[in-house]
Length: 581
Image 1: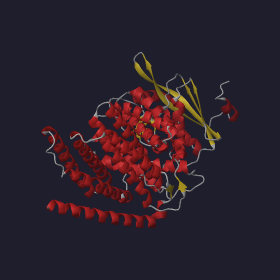
Image 2: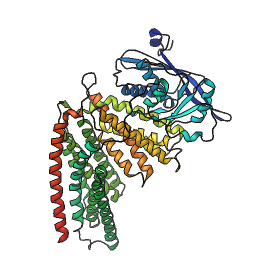
Image 3: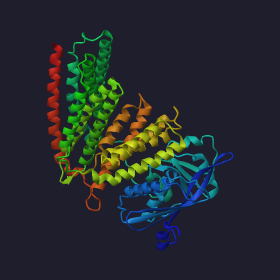
Image 4: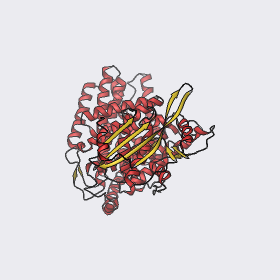
């Protein structure tokens, strides 16, 4: 007897929930839709996921089931670690791939957890993402055509794919859904309170204004020191190249100031980082062109800076409120980026690419500064938690996300390979390597970025000038909903806010960049919530309400802003005096 089926038979031969799911298979004329039955029973257990298919399916189906259960439990805010989930798929052929059934598995898991009946006249096709959104799959039209002959009245498809039916005549309703809660409403009639699609940036702006000011104060003196450089000792061609770099950086300063004045503080911070990198690069480049640049010495100094920062970093990582988790995690991620940049700098030098080596050296030093700035945000809110940050607490979450990333990438590649799938594969490799080295937070960030790029590969495969604005709108709304969902639980998803702001700034100038940043935003919006749940099990600790810390928050922010504003005004006054001279 199949060992996987044995626990199932011992519990109950009848399944509590079932639904029709759809797939595609190739025939002599192309592709055709096929159907299968998905069944689920939940029993007391220890958080295990069992999966049985007739016929056998690929291993990614098991990984998709695990993610679907994770999303269902998160959506319902239930601790499912004391439950086992038993899925069975009965199909007439091996055609149901895990990722394309992800949304269906999440729906049936929610139904079983809530003891709700699912409508037999509704079917769904789509992937499920950790952020609870439903992603694009292949063969949507073929699946819809097949569903007509199996009693289906409504088929739910991912948002942004309705245009595929423009030349089709069907006798069923085709409805776009963006989230698992929207889909669940169609199956059960139960309506969830959906988060708003407009976000309140006030708290985020308080934080990012301080960071932006800090980074401006760091970057501007580096640039102004270049203005006193004597380029007469350089060859004319080298001097001209340096002048062009300085002028280009000066244009970035103008853009940075405009962004700061318009309260786009994260974007202003990003430009200030770019200005600092370019300024250091130009400074190093001049020394190199004058034969006054010692690579080995610079490598040693950079390595010492990283080691010094890291040794101090882990000494007092005490969490006293919910929002510290993400600030620390982002800081760790920036720290390990600095390490990677040092490795790249050394590799480029070994390949006799001195210019790239110099640029990476400049980049890593600025990256260390940004790590320090993110860490500084940790102390802006005071709370009553007393938790020592430990990366190992997030090992399980990181491993699950690597598995999710692999599954989605394999599916995306089966539909269409692209630059996004290539990048997604590189990110998985980075994530796995970091995981094996014990760099859990960096691993987690890289896997989430991989998931984002696989989603982009799927959703952008059929993008045109006609529907790109719709795709931007969909992703923007999803990102906003996820941000508001986290905010409603007393958490400020800092990184998601940051990517969201960046996405908005690129809507007109570079729509594809805008799509990328909104996708990143919606994936990272649940990061803080997940970090908290893995570090502090939710059955042992209530979710922290940010408003509880409002008095301390207001005081800390006021003091921090006052100090930063005074420093900034002193700096600009000094700059103006220098210009008058």
